[in-house]
Image 1 (cartoon, rainbow, N blue to C red):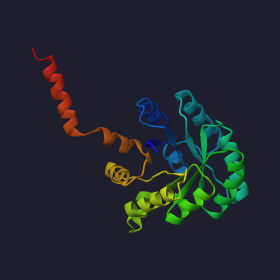
Image 2 (image 1 turned 30 degrees about the horizontal axis):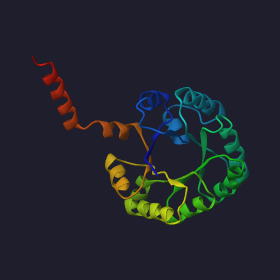
Image 3 (image 1 turned 180 degrees about the vertical axis):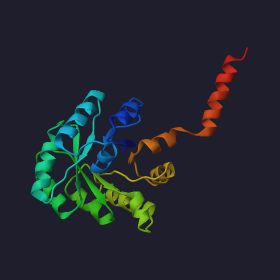
Image 4 (image 1 turned 135 degrees about the vertical axis):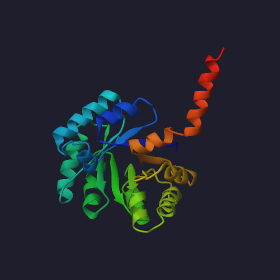
Length: 220
């Protein structure tokens, strides 16, 4: 499967800047990102964001469902999916409630990303339900004193071994080196912040070479 990069932001200004680069195949959000962007986590606010995504031509917008139990998650997810059918991919936590909510949603053709993945066995649960994505949190796994890179590569190998159509959506990257390390090991789908995206584009040696080209091009 080819590389997919998704922009991790709930700020439409970030969307406007980065979507036109052509680097991204989708956008991911969650309630924490909404709060940082000073946007409410409700259906009106998410409807406005969905409309903006449609105007930009975004093909995937991942929105996190919320609810205290499986029924509440399913109801919320159904409403989120209706904001932009075929574009919104609903995010559910890979908990017992999230798994119970996912099955009827998937049977109705609603696309699902499981989130809050911390263990390799969880990716097989996502595969068993034919979820579109499952998102392990690299940085947070490392914060627990574990080897996040090794564990995520094990997750990817497990999905490859069962010939899964579920994509491992690597989240919580802390630096561009995380992306390179995991891509070299076989991971191909990442959600990255605007800050990480800027770091990927800002190599001082490349900038210096480009400036030299410009000077040489205009020298008589």
